[in-house]
Length: 64
Image 1 (cartoon, rainbow, N blue to C red):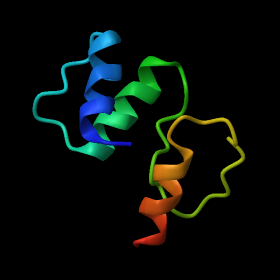
Image 2: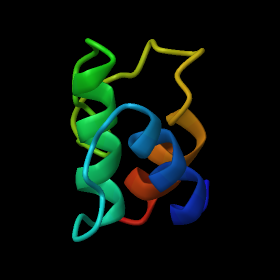
Image 3: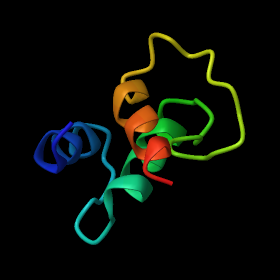
């Protein structure tokens, strides 16, 4: 997902996205949703198959 799209989601949730990088912004959205802020945190098995961020997360983890 592109930063523009992530910022739009964050803004709808009243999250100030101006100076956050992608990882921090997605984690802020996850917290606001009441979910674990686990985006791109290695060392765990992800069972959240319906997570909006799953595809990007798996891609980010594969780069580490």
